[in-house]
Length: 274
Image (tube, rainbow, N blue to C red; front, side, top):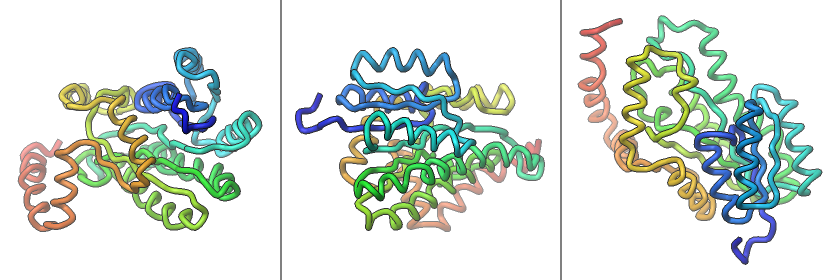
């Protein structure tokens, strides 16, 4: 445990697996009191047991981010146990339905936006007043490079993550006066269990899993980068170098970027409209 830290506290939604679990593990190793929220009771119990190897204070909370009352209950449990919170990580999310915009059902949009975007909104709504009362804290929202470098058939997911980026920017300006920082994380492909929530063809899943396997960084690396991001007070974090360069090109050379996207995406879609 770092000597300068005294009982720092973190809560991560979707904390029983994938990136959420990696974040929980990273902070547990730093001696934090760690709370994880998840809807999978078995994974939650297993993660709690594993985290107790690194820190003596672990809360496992049954938490569905589509229900505001679950997040409010999580806040109540955390306040009761610890008296407050230092870092909230709104991490839980899904990929959902993949397909062309005109073929997607409205129900598909509702499902993904309710989890990926409104789930973050609910997390903020449940915990913002606590951070304001404390006059301190950090809120980390997990978005994706899909919210910046958009591609065909990923419209729902990309829109949800673009919303998280915009939401975090707004949050930063609203919370700064209270001594509370906001941070948005935009990873590209890395090995995780996200394809389990992906409603697509086997071919598309195989492509995504292949891209994940080729990533030069993993969830543990990103967790460490997030900790540094919070410590440095950085609003944005894009852990993958290639995609970070694409973001810069899109910002500074939008017409060039648009032409490149036409070359990458438009011709294949026209040739294979299905």
